[in-house]
Image (cartoon, rainbow, N blue to C red; front, side, top):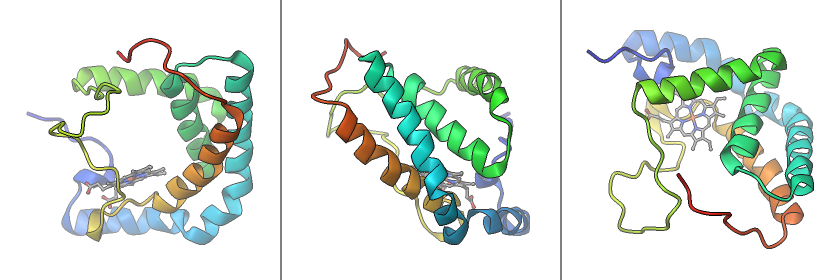
Length: 155
Ligand code: HEM
């Protein structure tokens, strides 16, 4: 038996519509735009840390803390639980045997998940926030990290 994850993506019908209606008001473009300066500050802080260190494990040092800090601040969760949530996330990954594809460019790879926000009734609820995250982080990363190189192979 597969345990049901708490996220809305496994909900269907009235149950899904009810949960989605409850949450969607929090993720409007207007709310997200008002939050853009905070996303910019979080991105700038993390990017300056990477640039100062000179090397990084990108997911652990940037991807994860960036996404978590933005989301926590957006929904008002205190940042001091960040370490706990990171641990739970990796425990859950191990529990469900979730693995991430190696960082090799392989255009013939099969089973790769798509990287859009999808559409229809399950279309990504956080798409506006995710777009702002990308807009505020990618240019800062490109400007701060000169000639980045892979430091060994991906696990
Ligand atoms: C680049 C970042 C992101 C990508 C590519 C992405 C992509 C997606 C995709 C493809 C789905 C549809 C899944 C399905 O059809 O079952 C989805 C659903 C969802 N996403 Fe995202 N997402 C991103 C960021 C976010 C963020 C930042 C949040 C929240 C803060 C979020 C919240 C959700 C939720 C709640 C759903 C379920 C919606 C529903 O079932 O009604 N996502 N996302």
